Length: 59
Figure 1: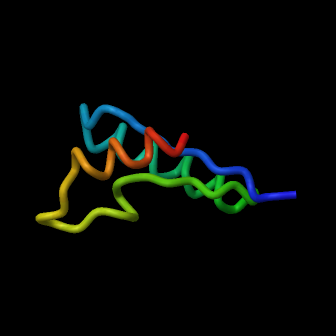
Figure 2: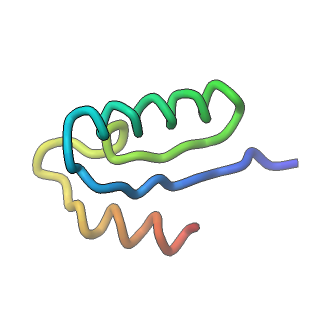
C-alpha cells in the first residue's frame, strides 16, 4: 500500500492561519500522510505558480 499524499493549498490571510496550516501538515506527516505545503517546499525566488500548478495536477 502506498503512502497517502495530500497537497494543502490555503490563503495567507494571517500569520495565525499560516501557523494553523503548518501545524495541520505536521500532524498529517506524523500520522503517515505525505503532506505538501509551500512552507516546506518553496524558497525565496521560487516559482509559486509552477509549484501550485504542478501539485494541483498531481492531486
